[in-house]
Length: 81
Picture 1: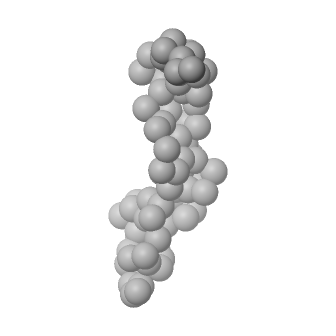
Picture 2: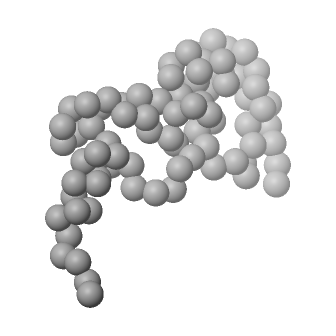
């Protein structure tokens, strides 16, 4: 486990980069929050319905579509009895 001090590519301020953290570390926390990323996630557009939804870079599950489109697709799957 190691960490480095790197310069933010957006604002140039130094920040800590941790190699054991899964979430996006491409910019400092302030710039990520300004851009809508960081801990709170970022808003992206659903490729199926076009509605905006929150995308979390550190979340492991399927986020390829908004929750309502994923739920509709799941409901159409055959039910196993």
